[in-house]
Length: 638
Image (cartoon, rainbow, N blue to C red):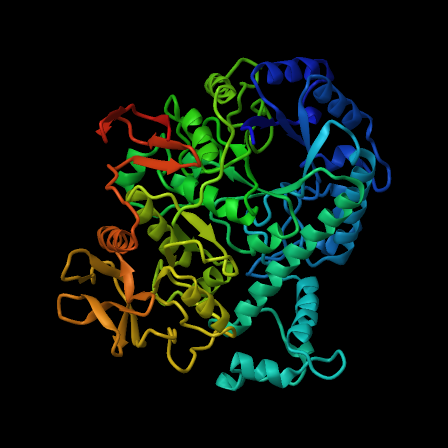
């Protein structure tokens, strides 16, 4: 597999006279892919049933004649104004009961059957017309599911669909469902919340105090299933007319729907990488840390998502939107350091990306994203990132083809676990995503490449598997982990709830071969950290353990902090960075995995025959017999 580059282009935004010039410049810069169409519904179908394809035919032809490959997107993220006139009830409703409005994008509810029918029609028109067009080499469904908090909708349509979904989840005689089975699963005897009929069940918002967590978890599952069904509808239509691969572009730290389930219906996972925006907008860190990486981005955040989406795509994944300069949407939007666009691109390739596409080709002079940089300025003069993209193109021309690499270390990520933590965090700021990301960061600080896995993955080829915070663990999963032959690190909160969001008995983690149970739990204030005898602390979340498992780490007051039994190690709290690095380093070394202590800001990633070094810092780093220049990538053959 060769590494390729691309960009995102909006021919409908620009005068027809410059399309050929743009296409020629893209090809000369070494770009292969051009994504188009994701926001163009009003130009494709200006009024219902009146289609205008001539301009799109022309644009695809111009790009194809320049030797470029088109990623054609379905435009369903931006329904035109006439759509709302036809379906005024299609708008999503937020948790406070307010309907969204027209005037930006993603203004639809996934449960609205009329809107889904309209989407099916426009997707069919596009697929029928361009499914065999040789210039259309890939497809993208919709755009950024979940962005702008648009997965969960509390509309009348969602309420009706949720009740039908619940009937199917709790089946009874005929099609009525078993309401008593639901009452039992949710524990509705508490606070007299019992229902007599599924039609009595409302959506879990606007309650006097917090709603039943079991109710909320099922609503989260339902909402995710609605996104999956919406995406599958489009993918199935496209496949009827085209053999080209289909992708969707996910976002960073968007966990409201199950990306693995979406990926099951697609060929490629892609995501939209905005390192500087994410540092300010989606990462919890001290101001001094954010200042240190303000022009480079977090050294681990992009890598985490590269590995996550490689798993979602079953090995095939892209960056569909790569930040090329300042963005418009974060609290602060600095310019990247020179060299960072090149570094981000190569980091994606080091994690197995097939393509990296820059957003966007030319900066828009109008509307909401006019402060978002592109490869060109609004006056078509090259922006600084274009030269770095051209440099990467020259470098990949001489680089070997990508070969896969399986790490000996794996980290399980589960979307339902994130929902469960969000529903019942038990402490301010305690989130599953942060726990898993802290674990990933510690492994990267040990110089390790990491594979991220879903729950039903094949575990048998790994030496160490980590599953922190995996709130529900089925017996099948526990058995598969035990049979894998790996050292398995669990906790905290692993197995803490059953599938209905209830505390299970026997008490968690209830893992065969590990004689321990969690007898009590507490969340910790930031100034209440619990020291460990061997160094570091437990922070945020702490569990009190009972049982005869071997104690391998204690708190300063002599309480079990980490225990082991059979192939399992259980960690009874959220370890700070120092403790994570020390504990996981020891686990890996005992499993025969080499680790190294990476200097702050320096990370590495291995492929089948290459080792990449990424210096995210603003100064050169002397380490491992090499000087790694600031904001740079170093590649060596193995």
